[in-house]
Amino acid sequence: MSVEKLARPEIVAMKPYSSARKEAPGKGILLNANEAPWPLLDSGAGLNRYPDPQPERLLGRLARLYEAPEENLLVTRGSDEGIDLLTRVFCRAGQDAILQCPPAFGMYRIAAQTQGAAVVSVPRDPEDFGLDEQGILDALASDERIRLVFMTSPSNPTGDVLEDDFADALVETARGRALVVIDEAYAEFTDRPSFAGRVATNEHLVVLRTLSKAWAAAGLRCGTVIAQPSVISLLRRVIAPYPLPSPVVALASKMLESGNLERQRDLLRQVRDNKGILLAMLENRNFVRKVFPGEANFVLARVDDADGLLGFCAQRKLILRGFPTEPALRDCIRISVGSKDDLARLEQALDEWETTQ
Image (cartoon, rainbow, N blue to C red; front, top):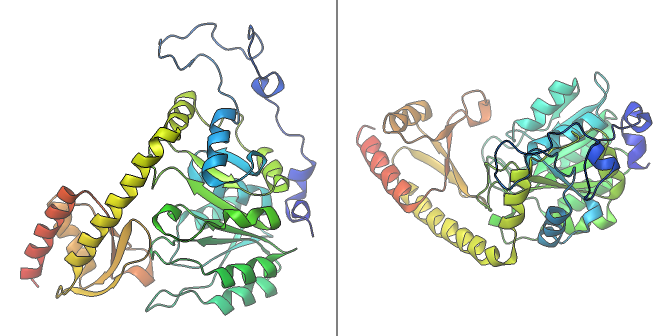
C-alpha cells in the first residue's frame, strides 16, 4: 500500500493553499501579497516581505548536512511541527492511532490527542527501560488503527539508541500499514550512523532532525523532516504558508556555512568531556540508585527522594528535570550536560544534599 493510501483521504483530495510567494517566487516589484512596500525596522532581513515557504539556500545546506536530496526534505519550526504535521496528515480523529513506547517524548502523545487519535503504548521495561521489541512488532501487526510508530534514537529521556536489526524489522512490519518515524534530535551525540540514509529505499520511513541540540540553536526553532517525496508532498499540503521567519532562515543558513562545522564539532567534543565529568560526579553517591548514561547530552538517574532533590537544587537555582506525572520515572531525574562552571555548582549542591541523607 502506498503512503498516499495511508493518509487521511480528505487531505489527499484537498486543494492546498497556494501563497503569493509560492505562486510567484523570485525577484521583481512585488505587488501581489499585500505587504508593506518598505520595512519599518531597517534590519537587513527584509521583514516587510514574506519569506520563501521553503528557502532554497537553507534547504541546500541542510541537504548537505544530512546527506539527503533536497526533494526529501521539509524545513519546519522545530521537530515539534514535524510531529504535528505527520499526525494531522495520517491520523483520522476517532479512527486511527499512533504507537509510542513510554517513557517517551511527550509531544508524540500530545499531537495524537490533539488530533483525536488514539495512543497505543508499549511500555519499556520498568527496570532498565529497554524496549519490548517483540511487543512493539506484535502491536503494529495486530492493530490496524496504527498509522504512525514514533521511535527516538537516542531516546529521550533514557538516552538509548535504536538497534539496526530491530529498525529493519519495524519498517518491514510497517510496510503497507504505517509510517515509522525515527526522531533523531540527539543523533549528533552518538557515533552511530543516521537512519536518514535508509529513507531513499523505504517509503514508510521518516526521520526527524533538528538544529536545537547539537547545533546549540534551540531558540531558532528549525527542524527538518526527511522522507520520500510522496510523504513530503502530503506534509506540504497542511504546513503553514510561511513556516520559518526570515531572521531564522538567515541565521540558520549562516550557522551551516562550512566554516562553522569545526566549531560545531568542538562543541560536541566539549559536551562529551563534560558528560564524563557529570557521570563521575554521580558515581558512588549514597542517594543514587542507578545511572543511565545513554548516548545523548543528558544523563538519567534513579535516585532516592527525587522530589526532595529537585527542590533542594531549585533553591540553589539549579534546575533539573523531574517527571512527577510519569509513573515509570517518578523516582528519576534528568540532568542536561552543562558547562564546567554549571557542573561545579551542581557538584557542590549534590555534596550538600548527600550530607542530609
